[in-house]
Length: 551
Image 1 (cartoon, helix red, strand yellow):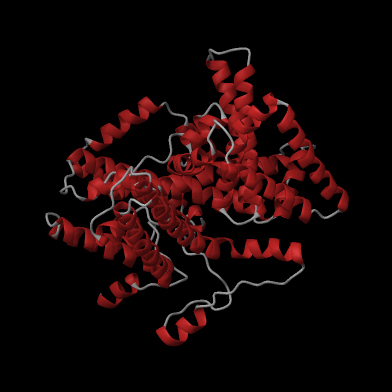
Image 2 (tube, helix red, strand yellow; image 1 turned 60 degrees about the horizontal axis):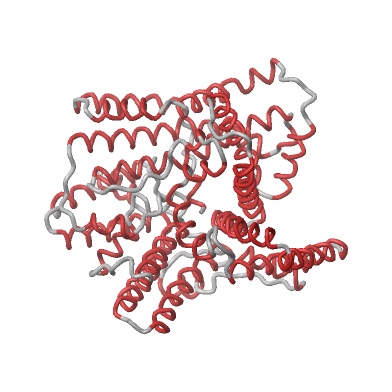
């Protein structure tokens, strides 16, 4: 029995903890026991949860927990120094320390190979980034780092953004620093949302860590609802669609017709939503059991009637972060900032330098010259550019946040163009009041556009994305056959059920959530057991990793 428990809790790089692992729930049960013993001693409780969260991260990313502790320590110190200082220059220098340390670590682990590819293409060199610390650490500290590949620590983008928002808010004098290191470390590393969000602001979460534990029966029931809901989303929708449809189509899109590629792409749109929102549902439910409220991260995004509305409903914690800490500092919708122009011209000149042929390079250089003339002599162009450039840049950088490849840049750029196009259309469209038909059309057009952009989000490389795009634009001559319908009807039926549930009116969803949270505890247990049994019928041989772990 003891050996089995030790095996469950043992950290293995090949088996990181997720909400679908039995080991995680054994860990969570142990955490709750200690949490109950310390619930009235807040300082000890927070320190205990800090250690528990570090232990959880160790089981997810092994020795990269050191990076998490390093980032936490730097921003805790910078936060207090910023609060004490009144010297403007020193405050800017301290903020720069936070930004450079956070983004420097993130850049090295997430973007080193991407930067090396770009640099090598530009210069003809053969720079190959290496984890320089791995050999020494393995030899002297007994660690087991991979020595020839830089591996991405799970969740590094999420906790980096949390730390950055903390120091920026203190710099803006919108927040006071957390008094104890253990309190701040608990906020940064709170294990339910550590590795895949939602991104939590200190102003939202820190006040909660100083409140005594209090969970009503209805809150506990609602937490169970979110855990069960997220579990079913992950297993029945996300994993089933991935194994039986999405992965097959994206592995070799040229083997399938345009119909099948379209079905696979639409299935991925549901998969990525069910996978990511399923994780955050479980995280919200677990946090609620512990007396902490996490921010809402999804609001039925496929009900959106425009690209702008979609991004208000999808990954809401990231969208609001990008707005407050990137879009507005760049100038928002008022004007272009120096950073805006530096980024856009660096990008254009970089493309001109990188261009595979001289005529492409000259064309890009000509576009830069035409832009300068239009911007200088046509005020209307200048105003329009200033209004939209920051939106495009924010989405491009948001694309890069998701992954270090040109596919993600294209995905972000397409969504930026979609936002700008909708903004322009809104200013000239001939109607203002929408009936049900126009609302339905808006939902359909938005879903098709968002689904189309996900070619580049899901495809493992550029060639696969282009192959799928070619199939979608040229391979529709074969009508869906009986054999095709027999091959795909099960995942297609699951996909249809997923969209049907997604489009249930929110008022009805609120009612059945409230009903579930008011049930007798025996019915909660029955519902949870029934859900596990149903999900087991859909479960693959091995649980699929959560998609956003890679970001």
